[in-house]
Length: 409
Image 1 (cartoon, helix red, strand yellow):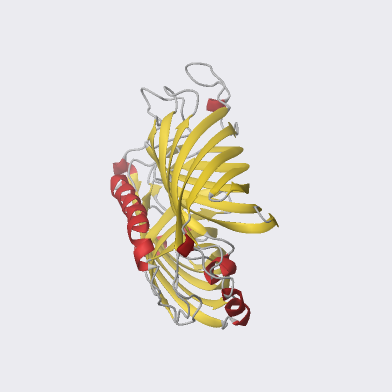
Image 2: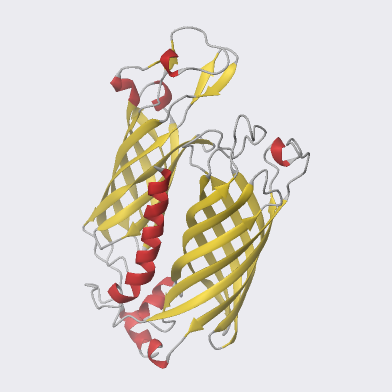
C-alpha cells in the first residue's frame, strides 16, 4: 500500500512537470482572469542545516550508541515554474510558483535513523516586496521520504520514534529572495520540517526540526515570457464575484491502533481500514480565501475494539473483539477555511461528531491539501487529529466541486 502511495505522488509530480506548461498555458478562464498565460521555468538548489527538537529520549542518548542526535543537513534540487511576474495571475497571487523537489537528508547517525531521501511537491509566493529586487516569500513542501531505519523489536528496539521505512514529509519555509542579476537569485530564510507516517504504523512519534535555508535560483526568462505592464489596467478593473461552491470528497486509508491492556498500552496486531466522506458548502470570499461548514462521515475499522479478558503485554488478534458496526461509524460537523492558489488549495478545519460512540465521539481537527486536476475535480490529501495532539488517520481520496466559478489554474 505504501509503495502505491509513493508511486501516486511521483506520478502526480511528473504530470505537474510535463503537462502543466502545456495545459495551463491555454486560454480557458470564464472569468477572464488572464490573457494567454506564460510560464517562466527555473531551477533552485538549497542547503538546509537544521536543529532536531529533542522530543524523544532516543534523540537524547537513549540508543545503542549512547549518542545525542541534535542536527541534520539536507541538500535539495528543485524544478519550478511560475507565472510571468507581469501577468495578471502573478499580480493576483503574488508571484506564485510551484514544482517538484528532491532532498537528501543526513541525520548524523545513519545506523540509527538512516539517511532519508524526500520527493515532494511544493508551492510558494511573495508575501511582500521590500525593494525592486528584494522580496519576502513563503513556501510549503509536501511529499514522501524513504530510506529510514525504523523501529524493529530485534534490530532497532530503541527507536520508538519512527515506525516506517517510508514517511510523510511536511515542510514550511519563510525566506528573503534577492535577484542580484536578471534571472539569478539568492534565497535565505528559516525552514521547519516534520516527518511521520500519519499513524499508519506504530510507533509514530515523528521527527521535527527547525533551521536555516540557503539557496541559489536560476530562472530561464525569455522576452516573450514577460507580458506588458498594460495588463495592470485589466487587473484594476477585475472584480471577484463572491459565490458559494460545493465540495464533495471521498477518502480512505488505514491505521494501527494502541490497544489498552492491563499493564498499559500495546500496538494492535493488525491494520484497520478507514473510509469517509466530506460535503462542504464553501463561501468564496475572494481569489485566495473560502470558508464554510463540512458534513463529515467516517467509518473506522479500528474504533472501539476491546478484549473479553484481561491481557498483559502484547496482544494477539484472536483476543480482540469487534463492536457493532454502528459503533465504528460517526457523523460530524466541522468549520472549514481554505487558502486558494493555482493548482493547490490548503485547508484547515475543526469539528465534533454529533453521531458516534466511544472512540468516535471526539473533537477533531483536519489539515488538507487539494490538488486540482480540472476546474471541478481534485485529488485530496488530508490528516485527521484528535484534541489537537493525538494522530488519528490519513485522508487520501478524490473530490469534486460544484459551481466553481474560477479555474483552478
